[in-house]
Amino acid sequence: MKAKLRGHHLICLNFFRGEGYSEEFIKNIYSVILKEKVEIVKGADDVCARCPYLKDNKCSSNEYTDEKIMLQDKEALELLGFRQGMIVDWRIISDKLPRIMEEWKKQFCLDCGYQKVCFPFTLH
Ligand code: SF4
Image (cartoon, rainbow, N blue to C red; front, side):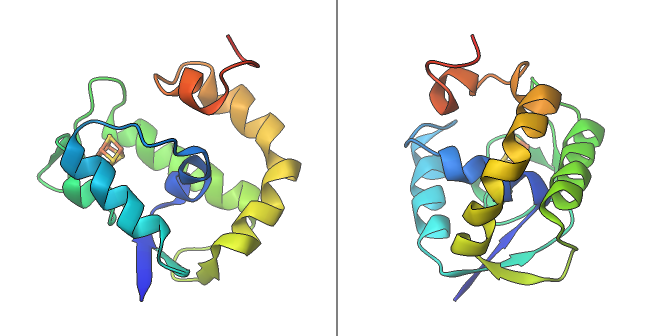
């Protein structure tokens, strides 16, 4: 079974620590990360599908606009060297993280509400 994931979730889910917007959202993420293969998709994905902020298939988070999320997805794929439609596995993704995380943190993590979950000792 494959998970369908958008660009920024390929990076952010590596730092999932069991926290999220609701119980249903968290439970769903556990089922997503247990799937061995990931198909890269554009826009709302298997994580967004159980998110209370998904409205009309767009992200309506308090923290981000849908445009900003789409930009994050695009930048994540550029950094990872992936394209939409590719099928990858978690090991291929995690092998690439050390090379890209400095740039990713600089661009997106400093303003993110999950910063203290992902990097409890390094960014704040
Ligand atoms: S906040 Fe937006 S991008 Fe994140 S899971 Fe929810 S709908 Fe998707």
